[in-house]
Image (tube, rainbow, N blue to C red; front, side, top):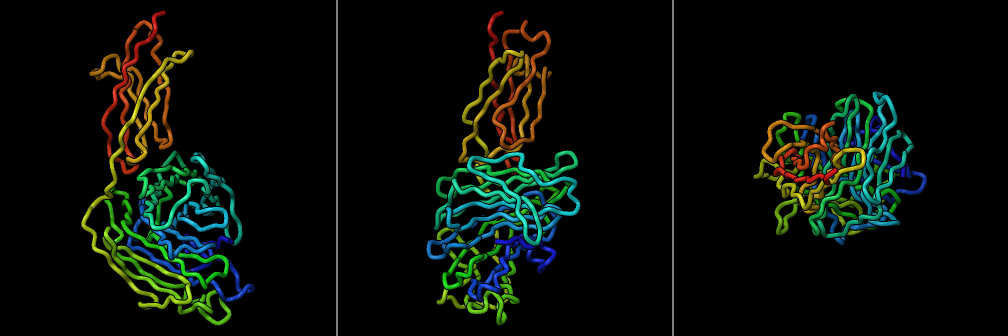
Length: 385
């Protein structure tokens, strides 16, 4: 599977991976897109994706999040010969002062550079897995770190309701935001257009730089018209596509189907669809702590450890304050951490610290969507000298 730089295709290809297979036939399912109405920069994007059992086909990439900009990239799920996997990739850009690197890899996540018509860093996870007929929430967030921009990727399993932080990448350019409109697509990368592949999409959001949320209320559906011409990759399946709005017990959602000998369009190419949204912010359970503790290390520091409930929204940043009393206002040590995967930190005791036997550590956090958590106070009793 080759990676095509966005500048070489249409504006809607900011996150595409399109194989050049004209020499292998004209049997690929039509590449299909939904481009949402968030035409502004942002720092968080969300989309929920589901693949119905009848729409799972080998060699298919179901992208749910694609963006442009100086850190252009894409995220989604795939049906791959090895497994059902998650994919998150970012393109190299002329403004980057160093190669993209992974600063965090979750369990089972691998990272590897990609080439072709463009280069970048790809992450994929074959171990976590996903199932058909289940909704998965995909979240990407970027934030400044000095003169670099970090990009994190999280997923939420709609069946278990558990969140997983898959990867964080370091992009060596400042303030590289998500440029809209956010794209979702279906790609058949191996000439298997006889098989129908379908994705469902709902509950998409983008956070503006002023902190307000924009729901993906409207989308532009299209199929790559240039691939439908004689001799091109999807010619034999040029009429086998469809898209629009459907409804289940959870409400309305967008759908796209590409390929399948029985698939026929019920709409035009392109077409626009709109789903009314009532909520003004994403609605996910707020972060909850499950445990927190601290211990003294041989070098006179406090090792503070904590865990969070994986069915609540994951953490993004923390603050730890060392206090002489549980209601003290003066912090003997104060540490702020913007490291979403952190589950521990160290606080240095004052030089006279062993003379005091009891301390308190105040632990607070904000979750992935910057909602504050309740404060946890940890009491530490130091051993006698």
